[in-house]
Image 1 (tube, helix red, strand yellow):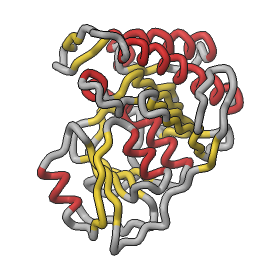
Image 2 (spheres, helix red, strand yellow):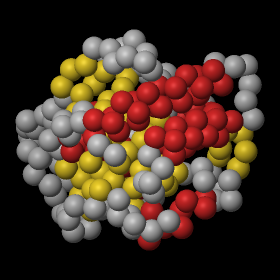
Image 3 (cartoon, one colour):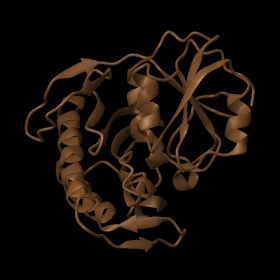
Image 4 (tube, one colour):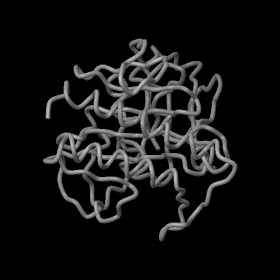
Length: 265
């Protein structure tokens, strides 16, 4: 596996999965099931997962693969692997709010180094190039050919007037209390891994997450943010957020542009 071979594959699979998801999203009705941890799952999650998994296994049979929808993969051990959330923001999808994403990432030695985040209902797509820098593709999102892309970069943040992005469906008092430590000009809410991407493009400066996430929720957005010059650290001690942890569960974290003066938890 080389980065030159990886990036076109993950971009193509994200777009193909997005097409499948949108077919179901735009249908009159779709069934919602409940997984063992009480989280919802739809036919869109399952169809996207099957497509992405098959494509990754065919292209990179020797790489460990972890995906949200295949619980047997959650027992895998390693610090270098592909990790997939075929539909992050299932609640956004069910409520037809649009802020859901397809997420595919490569983790190497515990760090997400390459990734793609595609929000098909929002027509926004972010990915890392082979050299590790991040771009936004502006369309037309053709699986066979890359459209127009523009490099993205975190903001040179003004600590007297920060833009904060937080979760749509998981906002709580602890998050608001932490945001209250900063001089905030405005805050916006976004669903799923789009929050990382809004920091990566400079549309936001700071994304604190005081709540449960799994590595497949964050790895692709984390890779995109790193490729745009951003950082992601643990909430408790501000050390880098790493991957390949037991059960692939994340601690609370903060994603931010480096010019932001971080406050203690």
